[in-house]
Length: 112
Image 1 (cartoon, rainbow, N blue to C red):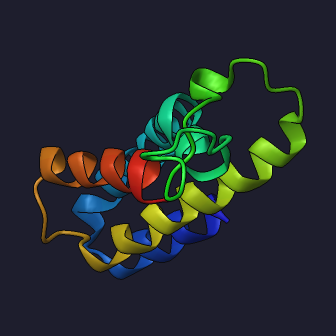
Image 2: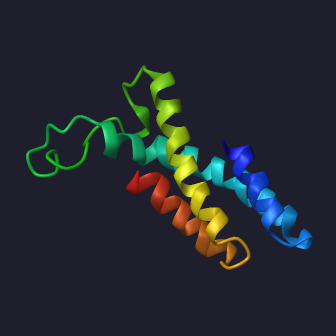
Image 3: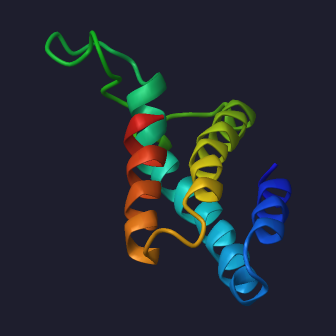
C-alpha cells in the first residue's frame, strides 16, 4: 500500500518534487514503525489494568515488552503507517517537511 500511495503522489506533483515525495513516503514508513513500536501498540492494545488510565488506554507493552504476537503487530502497524500516508498525499507540495514528520509521529504513535 505504501508503494501505491507513493506512486499516486509522485504522479500528482510536479516532476521536480517527485524525489522529495518518494523520500517522504519512505521516511514515513520508517518513522511510523518506530513510533508504533515504542508507544502506539501499548496505547492501543496494552492491558488496561490501571484504574486511572486503564479504562481509556493501555498501560503496558511499551516497546513491545513481553509481547510475542509479531504478525498481529505488523498487521496493525501497516494500518498506522497507511493512515499517515493518506494525509501525505493531501499535503503534497503544501506542507513543510518538519511539520509533516511531526504530524507523522503524532498520528503513528499516539492517535492510532
